[in-house]
Structure formats: C-alpha cells, structure tokens
Image 1 (cartoon, rainbow, N blue to C red):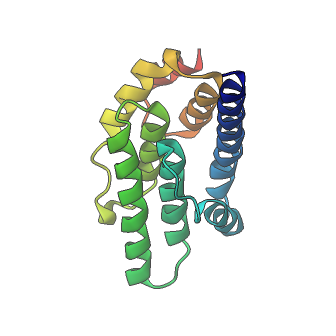
Image 2: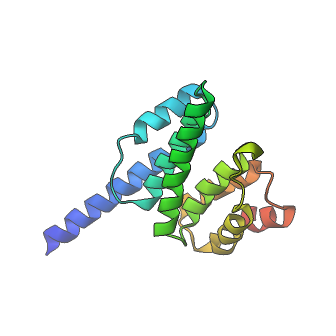
Length: 161
C-alpha cells in the first residue's frame, strides 16, 4: 500500500514539474518563432490524458501555424490546434487554466479566423474561480491579465490585488 502511495506521489510530482516547464515555455513561445518551434517540439509527441497538457499541445500547434508561410497549411494547423484545445475543455469544463489557454488564443487570433466567441465566458470563469486556483495557476493568470486587453480595469484589480 505504501508503495502505491509512493508511486502516485512520484507520478503527480512529475506531472506538476512537467506542467511548470510547459507553462513557462508557453509564455516564451508567444515571443518568437524559435521559442514557438521549441514549444511545439516539446509537446508534439504528447498523447496522454492530462487535459491541461493537451490544451497546451493545441496551443503549440496554433502558435506553429502563425509561422507557416502557406495560408492553407496555416489554417489547417490552426484548426487542428483549436480542436485539441476545445476537446480538452470539453473534458474539463471547469478548468480555469484551459480557459486561460483558449482565451489567450482567441484574444490574439485575427478576426478573419472567427475564433473569438468565448472570450467573455472564459474571462468570467477565470475571474470567478481565481481564488480557488493553485499558486502556479494564479501566477499564470496574473501574468496574462497584466498584458491582456480584454480584461476590464475592475477585473484586473480583482485578480492583481
């Protein structure tokens, strides 16, 4: 029994460590093509069931699409990435981190792609569930909210207090 508890603890700590690295890489990936490529390479082989990591994988594909020269391939990658994010969100609809990932994509997507329909829903869930999040997720949310244009001053004050 102790062995099973130990294995579970090790597994959980590996996921936590992996998520920490992925979170940091996601922020960096939005800054340059090279970082986006590294982020995509980090997650392209991920095929397990952690919905948060799957959402980051989808975001990595969306970021990769930003740097593809051909419009058709750009759109195909974008749709593939968004589909993965939406699937992750469907499996964990109350996961604020996945809502944050989707919000970050929607806020930074050109209007022509028509993927901006959930910004208010995502903001509401993020703001309303902020106090219940882990320290790490709170830091991700704060970092994003500071530079986001979609949060009102009131919402920013609620989160950045």
